[in-house]
Image (cartoon, rainbow, N blue to C red; front, side, top):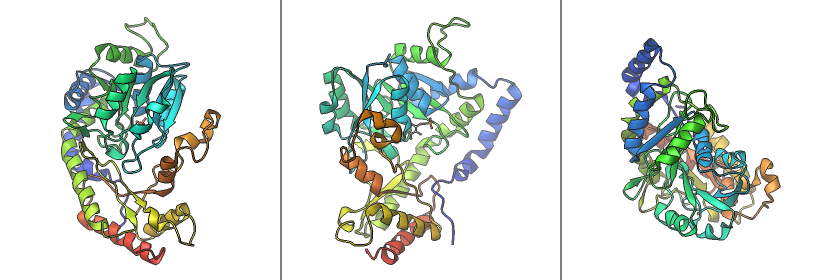
Amino acid sequence: MNKIPPVDLTRQYKLIQEEANSAVLDILNSGHYIGGEAIANFEQEFADYIGVTQCVSCNSGTDALFLALKALNIGEADEVITTAFSFFATAEVVSRVGAKPIFVDIDPHTFNLNLAQIEQAITPHTKAIIPVHLFGQPVNMTALMAIAKKHNLYVIEDCAQATGAAWGQNKIGSIGHVGCFSFFPTKNLGACGDGGAITTNDLAIAKQARILKEHGSPSRYRHDFIGINSRIDAIQAVILTVKLRYLDYWNEQRQKAADYYHQLLQPISCLKLPQALPGGNSVWNQYTICLAEHCSTNRSNGDITARRERIKQNLQQKGVISMIYYPIPLHLQPVYQNLGYQKGQLPAVEQAAQQVLSLPMFPGILPVEQEQVAYALKDCLLEVEHLV
Ligand SMILES: *Cc1c(COP(=O)(O)O)cnc(C)c1O
């Protein structure tokens, strides 16, 4: 029995091994490990790829979000609307600049912000909205930008899980005022270490972000702001420049893998499969299923989270490693108790947190491996849950 990991990065590496090794060796031999041409080249190529005029690289997706908020002068007494179903960093940065995250529920079909609930969350303190293109699925940016425009709000796109995704004709990260990307290794465009970037068409925002990421310094040894130190290594920049040329190919492979999962899993009536929104082009950072609602009721064998845990364990015994993104919604995180959210307040987020299960998904996953995942899943729904 083969073991199928949630992600296997060695398969990507094998494809680019020679190019990447030689690019890294060039950097090692050059002695220029920080800044310089490698960084400028990557920023230019990434801006061109996303379809914006400006790209500012930094140390992580988290820093990208932080720099975006800071560059837009968002801080004390400001409110920022975002989803409660995301990685913690999305909300953490809002708190770190001194602003208050305002959590909105999700659309259970896309796991993304429920746009119909944004307007009621807007107050005179609201400065920005952070939509998260979760699991690679783009938010409906046409509708979101219309709301933002009507209320004069900034839109900071959290594109960490969706590099290469598009809404209509436009890549995500080129539609809001700022796009924030992560190059963490498991993201669609992943470095061999940490990295991040912001994208924008607004020169003033880019300029300010660049000053802030260099200790608030517009010129050497002059400091106008309290900034941070946030750089991407030259080694990571050249690896990303090589990998960027393969990104569309890898995203197509993810799409094919998603289609195949769909075909394999469709007959299992107890699973709710991820849906792609018309108008958007998802890049499938994750393939995330739920146990369908009708299978969670009128059954005596435990609540749905316990059932999910049994399924996860059972899959693992069959060599399939699944993941739970994310088990605790942001509004119910211990650190956010002070914000006063109650259990039950964002029902779609809370339900997703109890039901989601992400299956192995990465470029280069083999059809035979996906078949093993599907058979294992069907088996444990039969054996453990008697559901199929
Ligand atoms: C990964 C991720 C981040 C943070 O990116 P890092 O590079 O790990 O700092 C932010 N938001 C979301 C949605 C992410 O998935």
